[in-house]
Amino acid sequence: MIPSTFFGLRLLRASAPRWMKYGSAITAPTWQPQRSHRLFPTGDELYEKTTVTHVERDSPDIMFVESYSRQGFIINGNEVVGPCALIPRSILQWNVLSYRDISYESLSLFRLLVPRIEILVLGTGDRVERLDPKLLKIMREHGVAVEVQDTPNACATFNFLASERRLTAAALIPVTSN
Image (cartoon, rainbow, N blue to C red; front, side):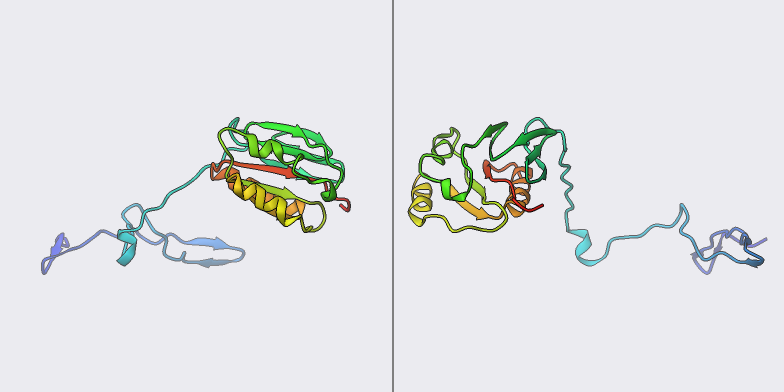
């Protein structure tokens, strides 16, 4: 009989190796961690915290642009035809045909929202189009940052900001080539 301790070291009983058959050859398995196997954190791992954020696709509080096309957008399962404005918890038709129609009046909704939105993401279609600097300055003076992007990137940016629960809005013009 083998004692359970030997020179002060505890001995563990090892189970007999199990032989497996792979094809026509019989091989011994490689070492596999068992229930008694435990990994311990080392160094900085002891002090790091891990957080997990679960973004629900069907959350009633968050708007997500699921897809876009030449006809419009699918937002939280709702099909929207043509340009649209996304404000917290609402989808509105936006009365513009192209980036040339974006004006002080067409952006007035985003300046008047309460609570005030932090960021307006403007999707200008297939490409990033240059807007009137005076218009962007007026929006900044009203406390609304404006991010002008092509529509595919604007959709992604809006989804990212919305998932972070930022007070954000989007004004999106459909792409013409898809």
